[in-house]
Every structure is written in C-alpha cells, then in structure tokens.
Image: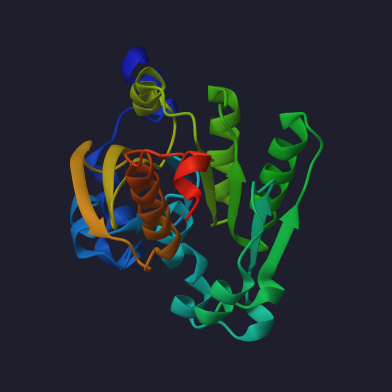
Length: 250
C-alpha cells in the first residue's frame, strides 16, 4: 500500500467501500428525525465519538435523546442496563425530563473532576473502555488530536458513545474539526423553535448543508425571554413626565 494512503487511513481520513457493511441502516441508530437521518445515511453510528458544536443550552442534549434511550432500543433487562456518564456538566440534570422519557435515574453517573482537563479525559477514557457504559457525555472547549484518537478508540472498544459537547464555535475551529479522527461532527444553531444542524464530518458520506428540525420539546423559557426583551423594548419608548408641585394641587 502507498505509505501516504496508509498514513491517511491510520488517521481515519480515508473511507473505503469495505466499511459500507459496518454502516448499513440496520447497524445505525435512528436520530428520531427523518431529515437528519437522511443526511446521516440512516442515523448515528452505533459507537464512536460524536462531536457537537453549539451554544450551551440550545437543545443539544435533547437532540441526543436517541442515544440516552439506547437501552430501550436494545430491550435489555434492568440488570443489563448500561450506565450514562456525565463528566463536568455545566448545569444540573433535569430528573423529571429523564424519567418522563423512561430513562432510569439509576443509570446516571455524574462525575465532577478537578479543574485540570487531564482528570476529565482520564475518567472518560476509562469509562468508555470499561464496557459498562452506553454513553459518556463530556464538556470540553478544545481537545488535541491525540486525545480525540484515544477517546474514539476507547468508545469503539467499549461499543459505546463519547459525546463531546463543545461551545467553542469559532469558524476556523469548526473547519478544523473536519480533519479530526471523529465518527461524526455536528454544528447546531437555534432558529426560534427549530434547530439548524450542519454535518461537518461523517465517516460514511460527505459533509452536508444544514437541515432544520423542530425542537423535540416546547421551549417555554426561550419564548419567555423573547417576550421579556419585547417588553423592555416597549419600555424604552416610554418617556416619564414629572408633574410640578403646583399642578398637583386642587
């Protein structure tokens, strides 16, 4: 084999037709949205590292509801349910939402590490390789290629997902993600009650233009925020008039 081609394959920058069977529709996890499944050639890969670039709280976790509900799709018994690991989440998990979607709270493990990222990366890698987890969600601004490669291989080894949630949305950084050894890279932006999702990279298929899907929930807080901004705008047009004391007398 050409040494250059061999090096590109080792970096997972080359896809060959021999991998087609590994990504047949029967071996993919449907996202729950037909438009997104179509640009992903059938759905999420069954294992590997998925990168999501988005502003915090725009609906990125709810988009991954299919991953959170994997145990239901696999029809495992309660004893066989694998764990869902959350490493350094920047918010409190909504237990009512999870229970409402039949996600057992006994599956959840929340890990808070020290400020240095090495502890978070070590926790993620060990959890993925253990085979006891269906998915590990981690919040990191930036990761080196070597870290991504380790986490991708650990996820494939443990037949699990590593969901990298990234709020670093610089355009140059997103373009560089196309060259990273990831199974999938998505960029998400909010448009009122819809999500615009762009496929930056996928192992099978090309990068895709944005597709728009309705949010899988009714966002009351977003609407309340718009209403509050509108009321503030109206208030700014009101001019206060102070009455003189003489005018206040009868």
